[in-house]
Image (cartoon, rainbow, N blue to C red; front, side, top):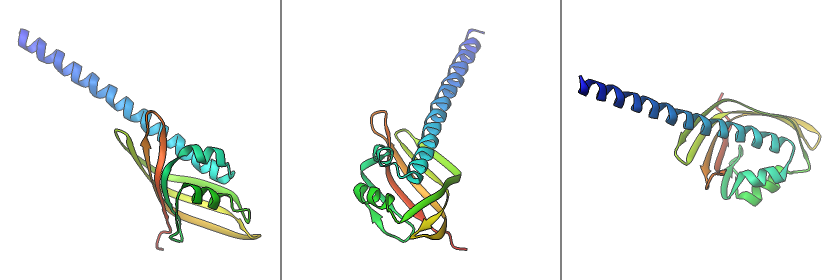
Length: 148
């Protein structure tokens, strides 16, 4: 009987440990989702300060036309005065967190004007975030246009 009580107690501890671990992963996932929205909004508003805080110094961003940018290059690209972003949104977002690294995949939709002419993008993206001592930062991003 005593062995059975011990096994039940151990099972309860393992279940509670798993629950606490799942809550932690859920909190990290929510943090990443919030950061993705923050980054999308900052891009739409050409908010360099926010984008600067979200991007790691060594970030690499590959955009739809295949151009690859460092942090400073991407920030310059993002505030192109000939571009007016009217809509920027993400959907079908999936987050996978593994300790201090998160991989995000999703769909990106952007509409606006460039040199006064309308444009529209429907892309897929993959973002990689890394936790640097309690602060998540983007370390890599890749956008591509799906084949129709």
